[in-house]
Image (cartoon, rainbow, N blue to C red; front, side, top):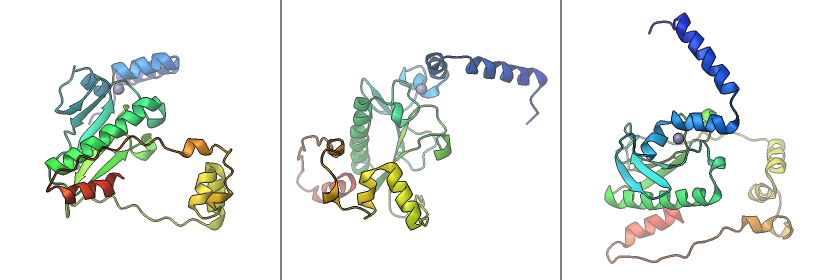
Length: 215
Ligand SMILES: [Zn+2]
């Protein structure tokens, strides 16, 4: 590849200055205009859709980790998970669960990975929030094994203090009953949507697997 010309460098510098002078709203508009996933969301760029509603879109990844790898995204431009409005975030994960179920059934997959890369340091390459849903089969060659880093007792205490009471409990540093109910305990109670039992005869095994996989 040839080195960038003086003209290219000047253009890059100009763009950098332009971006730096933008308000957060202008920057978001600029990102949106240049975002390939926004263009897919608005139908300007074609993609193989597997799911669509008013707010979200699921498409097949053109470079899949496994056949059936779905990219699920909001139609509105948001870059990372914390930027999604709560309702949209909930909706995305409800749809992710549905797509995961569909992949298990349609592709006879035995499991799925649902992955979110939050920020460039976590491996996010797109400027648009994406949940990856990857169907898995025995011996498919993919590996998502995480290394097991060691944590000193001191680190545990520091992290637990920083992250909050819930992690104290998880790490066994504090007993659940010691938590005072008035201390934000309400926010930890997840809203559980009504469960629909739609078990078909002869599909018991798969539904049992789904329960284990998706709770
Ligand atoms: Zn976008």
